[in-house]
Image (cartoon, rainbow, N blue to C red; front, side):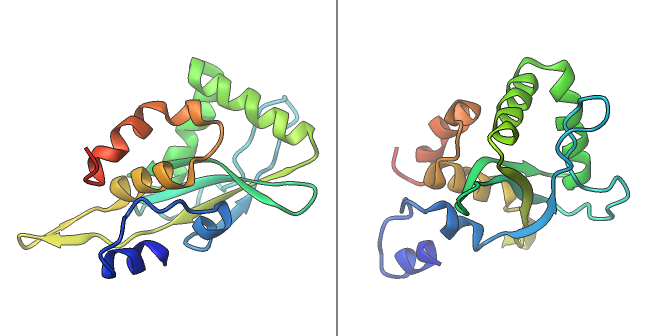
Length: 167
């Protein structure tokens, strides 16, 4: 991993990552079932998916030419199924969720496919306690991968440099 190599060499943690570099850290979980019979976006994970571990997830576009592009990076503190249920509800009930839904429909209309990827980072130990690391990793990835559309991560991007020691 480039960030680990940079740290060991005394380098900068804020190395830009390509989308493929970042996806090498993740595992692909599911393709989306794009639109159901009622015209609603579906998120492709089964409701009985047992995993409740904290994770960082990405919505990934597989372009018709074969390139992959990370559209969104988020965190799921209580597991991916719970977070995807929140997104599904947001697609209908919140302004931000409806914006996400429109952007994802546009991707699907271009002929691209969408998939959900996840990274399950280990907690770190501090003062004898295990501390979840998914929030810090989400901030790092947003700042260094710069997923599109950027407006979806505006507030987190502003906070990221302070977390990396650049403030």
